[in-house]
Length: 119
Figure 1 (cartoon, helix red, strand yellow):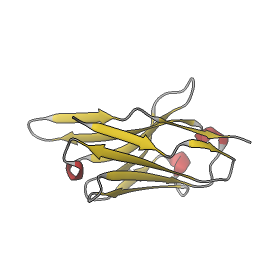
Figure 2 (spheres, rainbow, N blue to C red):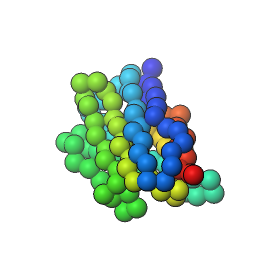
Figure 3 (cartoon, rainbow, N blue to C red):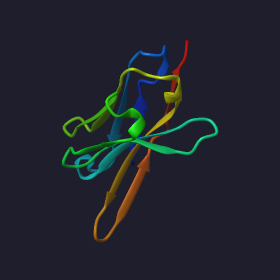
Figure 4 (cartoon, rainbow, N blue to C red):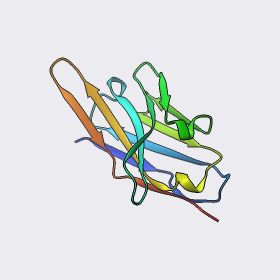
């Protein structure tokens, strides 16, 4: 049974920090590209950060220099360190696991965790 369980969301003031974690189970974690997406009310689902199986990373322009994605294949976890948070970072953040091979494709999602940046 595949599970992606996010944690670490909450309410934080502008300029503050939060660390999101995603615990994965039920699949071979090291074979998957892991990503964080977010969706704010009235806005489209957007990619925030991605970390590939070789640990190369990619970030949305709006979070570069503020957010850091990392993975621990021994613990089957992916983290998102969010610094210098802004009100526009307010959204539900989702963990995603994706893998494609010659014969199959898999795409898994967590249930999401709310991040609210406000005074």
